[in-house]
Image (cartoon, rainbow, N blue to C red; front, side, top):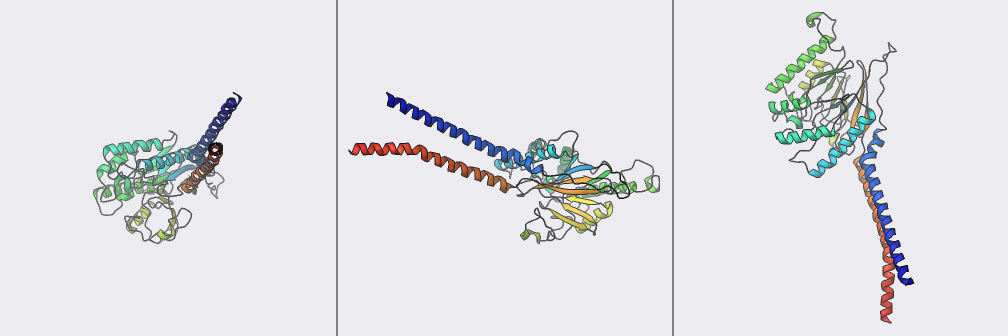
Length: 392
């Protein structure tokens, strides 16, 4: 009877030990998921800070500062080429990064520089509605923050795929604008896909709109009531920021550098005009029409900084999707009517997340094997004793 009780006690102790181990393993798995899928975004983005704009030299007063968050090339996967698991993973990452950035940094306006969707150029009305619904969920934002977008070639098609239907569908969905002003800062948002220069109907309308905006901006710099501008309502007298999907013309990324630039083996590959970048003619038109103080573009998925005419700074914003980069990022811009400052906020690297998961998996495997050996030892000892008893 005593032996039976001892046996039951031992068995109960082993079951309790196994149950305790199972809870410990589950706790480790939960902690890894919590870190890799939630906490890591806060830990990384908390290190990002808005850049400071220096006050004007002639005055100690600081003009109102507009804080803008700029990202590009989210490429939400569609129903044709997008695998459900790839969609789930990439969209979760972008949603967590975006929502964390809004909560931590509190931007006043967010700009997305095109290629919001991956298959907008050919998606059916139902597929478009589904993709748009997912975008609105992922990139939801408080009412006091504004979200502005420009069209990319994957949203409406390359020039020869683009149609009035895809352009109007995009502009209706996002209430797309060509000109936006806030806190004395002017932004011109260009449909760079339509800057082909071949006088197609869509291109002609886009250029006419831009010429009218150019006239308004030029009038804002003149004395009120003088010249052909008259005494009507004026825009803030500030050189604009140009926002577009395609970068202005450059021969290649050979002069680009930094941790988020294109890989070294790709930097010297020549750019095709009207495909990798705008043509030289279209680029000169935009620079002449608007005389911008800053140009922000996307499309290449990599970062690059270029000076046009020796003074106009262009920054290519890298892709916001981990599908395109191991180290996505976005730009933080502090802007006043006459000055600006930029900084970059890097998101968690995919390698870091994968290494964390692999490390936890290895630790769990080693822990499990060690305990499996402990549990197997009494069984093996009993089996050996039983064989010895039978041999006698």
